[in-house]
Length: 409
Image (tube, rainbow, N blue to C red; front, top):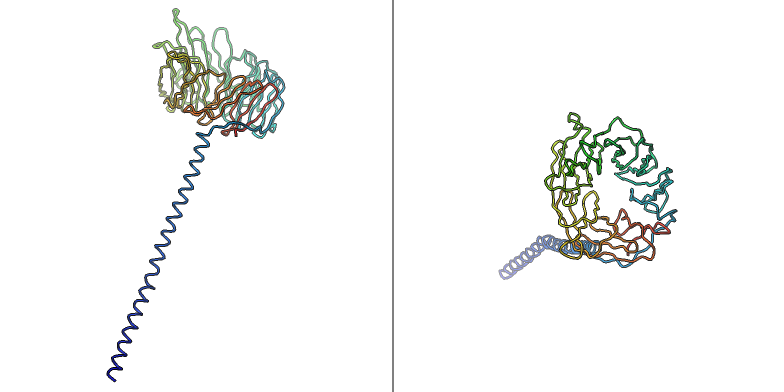
């Protein structure tokens, strides 16, 4: 009996030990699952990160490094009097201007509207949704938006320059024998009771004008001669903040120190503007509209081409020390973003994102800011102009026979 009792005790101990081992395994099971799940999540995260990196790398190669060798024509349309027509990028499409009217095509080649007018030398200016078409050395003008003509008018004097704000406010520089005359108009073509008339003998002749996108500010480049010495100056007018200022002028800058001739002034935005002279460029911070600041950058060499968009200014300068050219790109703050050596001088230049489109009568090339060639092609037909579309790889080509939209491949 004693042996049976001892045997029973040993048996119970063995069962208890087995039960403890089994319970430990049961208790440890959730810990092992958590670790396995964590490892699975980590592996999945790594896979996702690798896929994202691959997508980003593929995008970078396609957008920044890939060289396109051919193109496809998305659509084409006949253009009457193509050799004398004017073309301007507008909205997501393009406007074709002739002497008897303009036509707006969207990015699919659909004719959105036609605007009839009578002009001998139509020129255009675009800001936001508004388009101004005026007759250079004539007296007629038309104001359009994406729906068509919103207004038109006829001036009493010859138009020498026209600009428009994103609000539709239009500013026309008119020819006058004794004074410079600048007049304002509503988007309906109605003349506003706002004008600038300065005697030529005092302020000089206006070389260029530019209106801010909000329509409240105006920059004018003047050139005056006193005692046989010519001097350029830039005056900023403000019709909102400058109500108390004489002649609405809130700032004026002259170039008597370096003797620069400054025929170009442009508002890039409501807070940034620039001017280009024969030996320098100036960047203006107009964010404080009553305390405008100026930053000058000397230009070594002769400026051959000027092009810009809302973010960048591009200059093609003849390199006096070499046989080629230099292409300089500046930000709206006046910082040099890139400079590249160029062998050839082309007829036209334009920005498209961080690429530059350049073209001649039978050739088109697209370069990155770093100078990498993204596309280069000779064309059999005469190219009157090449205009970048609203997306990279899309361009409008105006040839002798037609207008095309192409996409690089």
